[in-house]
View 1 (cartoon, rainbow, N blue to C red):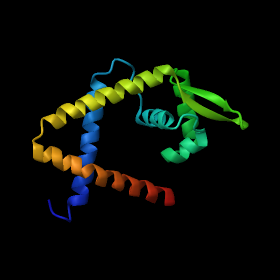
View 2: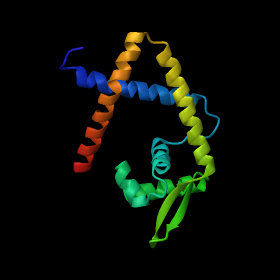
View 3: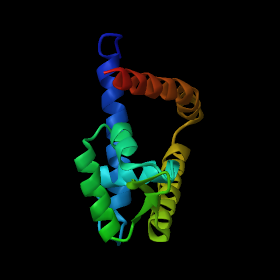
Length: 151
């Protein structure tokens, strides 16, 4: 792998791993499949309970009306609760339902088990390399996030 092709190869590898993890986990699901944006919104509400729609839209880089549509669908499906913001009765605060929390917990557990099993198949050198790369990958994600914020 040359330095010229490294960025493309890294991006392709990360995308490929993520895509394959999603496919494997989806193939085992018995519940109706959620779209990517729906999962992203649920994961954001999980991380920041009570987040408002406009803040969620900014965080997900989506239009406010797109997030409103997602919220309506997820609320209809029993996965999100739209509570009135006590500070501004016109605004909504988003909270996961117990059903959504259970679904996300199951997804996290199955994802961890899948990745754990696949990492265990690697030799010590590969496992050590992946472990050493995690902090750099987190910094890369932070830089991408910051750059997106500035745009």
